[in-house]
Length: 313
Image 1 (cartoon, rainbow, N blue to C red):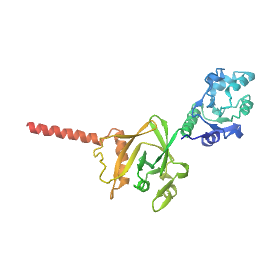
Image 2 (cartoon, helix red, strand yellow):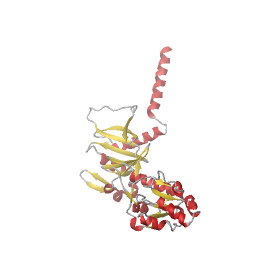
Image 3 (cartoon, rainbow, N blue to C red):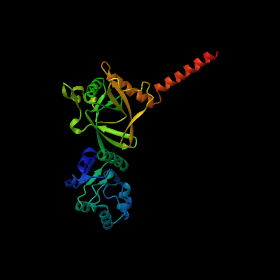
Image 4 (cartoon, rainbow, N blue to C red):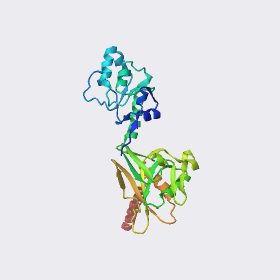
């Protein structure tokens, strides 16, 4: 599913203000891309991305200031369309007077940002990509463990929320319980966050719903987190075989990203919180080049070689 975002949400989140067209603040932005309309200002309107937010920086403003008032009016008639969601003027520069009535005619809000143009472009693009990205909901408990985004999945009743509660008590952070919304940032990155109705809440069987931030403080929760690892908690009934040495690499593909996934058996007496902490640390160590199974392989090869040399002697 895809979210929508309005001009009002953009201005209330970023350091951007509506200076003209306050009554148009509920205009919906449909494209996550931001356009710097340099060629449009020169009169080249072929392939003009009119559905994007238009950003005017110092270079564009310098070009506009070199034109007469009548020429600027003609330029802004090309720039403004019924599909243009907003026009942003960067660096706090003064809005050209010729733009105001034309933008008003097409119901386009004019925004002002104090930051330099490249920063405004980056901030607005990141904001729009986050809010307009395609999303998928996945059942599970999402946590930040040692700075890594760890998603606990498994059958209902396997103990995901209870394990999450113990991890929070041990100093880790809750991102989402029961359901996490995932969206793709780039070809390597998935971000996850809780639906608004579930933020900071954790359901414990027999206890009910608790507010983690209220009980454990603001440091016990995280608004969003990159997904680094999926841990599949499986009830150990003796029928499932597990990779004892960690040589098998399993991944789950979400959108276009392959996320590493490991299976952990659940049975009476196992401290899942400690095991998950160890899994996260071991995964981080392997990412940094410290792989325990490779060390074991080297030791095993050395032992085999040593035994062969003894036999030859």
